[in-house]
Image (cartoon, rainbow, N blue to C red):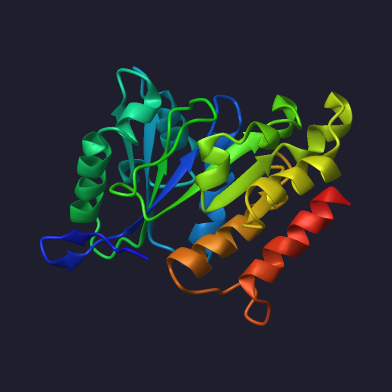
Length: 232
């Protein structure tokens, strides 16, 4: 895991949260932050929108995290531009958070939303999540978008909607695991809080190299158990 260096000092790890518009990235972020804060993680957030600060303002008003720990980046073009082609604006925002909050451990960088081709530059992030949702159709994994294939963790969100939109969850998860060669796939229902603890565990284990919630269970086994539970 790369830890960014800021003027010779260790900087916070940087984790991307990307995915198509409406997949539930901000909802995941809102559910994830309390889990991380409860684990004692020193965290801050950067949001990316096209020409507004809408997501940042939503988080600042939520009371979940101190408003000054949320920065906004305006992409001004396709959102993937500032997380992949030229991530300078996001790098500068992350460096600013590092300077403002000594001891910061983790910066979550939410993309403004894009299609299945959206990916994060590894110059910007150390680890990234890609969020898709059940309501978008169970064929999403079969489309083999770069985001689905390359992310560290694929999050299939809104699993509670499967019965209402005619999605076969078993098939969707099986196809997601197949195209990802068995790499981590986690099911979540942010509205009901399902699966979010597992995502927090993964970040603590894989990014921060600690695991406080399941000390006796290997973290990848915990993720597999969650996936099985969501698809049962």
